[in-house]
Length: 327
Ligand SMILES: NC(=O)c1ccc[n+]([C@@H]2O[C@H](COP(=O)([O-])OP(=O)(O)OC[C@H]3O[C@@H](n4cnc5c(N)ncnc54)[C@H](O)[C@@H]3O)[C@@H](O)[C@H]2O)c1
Ligand SMILES: O=c1ccn([C@@H]2O[C@H](COP(=O)(O)OP(=O)(O)O[C@H]3O[C@H](CO)[C@H](O)[C@H](O)[C@H]3O)[C@@H](O)[C@H]2O)c(=O)[nH]1
Image (tube, rainbow, N blue to C red; front, side, top):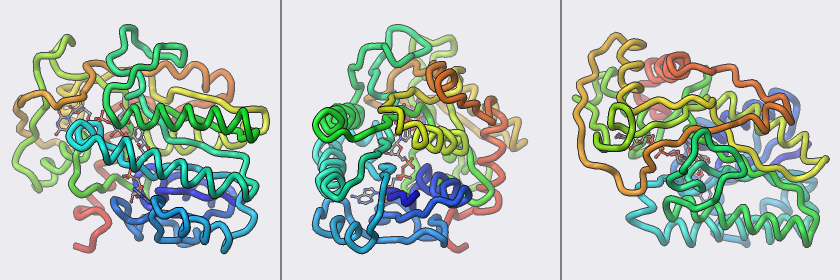
């Protein structure tokens, strides 16, 4: 199958591109390298450095690559905290990127679409673990932009018979041998904690120690990027039977203090840590129920425990101390 992957130079997208190519699919990547890295793109993929806000340029990519059957849409502004400071980036850009893509792709015959959605759709949930039936009440403009895209996909399904998968990841983490997490600036907990162990930062600050959780710090559900990639492949194959929406996590929550503790074990470094103020937009607890994709598609995460997820990230950061940049 020929698949267009937007954001294929980014963290999750680059791993999915590798897995698609490994199983014999043909891949075209669109990325404007706003956060992604050219070095992260599998050399067997075709690459177009294009901004999805530019519909004309997106159309040119389709016209130069006839026969694209499916889209996996990773490209996005992705930060909950930033979206509380700069909502317009999210409420405009994320939505326009998705709409441009649909307006170009659907008239050219694409009928399969997978969206990277998010746990942030659930805001501050009242029940955990969170399954797909829980109320949607986004916790930030970022989450709102993803909910709007999910709803837009529903209309495209009704009107154009587009089959879509909405995959609501909880916290993507870990690395494969070839690909790891490198954002600039980095804001995610695991790479930041590991950068202290690598000697690149002196200490780590936890945002908030007064949440209603056992140790007062936020709880998240970490899911390995390799396992996310497998969920994408399974979902893509299942779209012929209809659209689907899945929550993707391991079903186990870890507090920010527990993440630091696990990283201390993996790295053998003391990782000095202090508690700072809360970060606006952060829900206290997010833990997924992924029973639906497990039972419907047989998804079985390979990395179910936090230490093995952090260990894989640690291996990558040790071998790429400056990420994708040359040292
Ligand atoms: N990382 C997580 O924990 C997590 C959790 C839930 C959902 N998600 C979603 O998964 C997707 C991938 O996340 P990630 O962590 O890999 O992010 P990332 O920032 O590493 O990758 C996103 C990619 O999109 C590209 N991009 C951004 N704006 C673009 C534009 N206008 N045109 C073309 N390309 C553009 C960036 O250059 C980058 O390579 C995102 O949609 C994100 O919202 C991520
Ligand atoms: O320096 C830091 C950075 C993060 N954290 C904490 O670590 C936890 C995880 O934060 P991340 O920034 O690593 O990830 P988020 O939970 O904010 O967000 C991730 O998961 C979300 C879904 O829940 C989104 O989809 C988003 O794209 C993705 O980045 C949060 O409690 C956050 O407050 C800190 O304490 N200190």
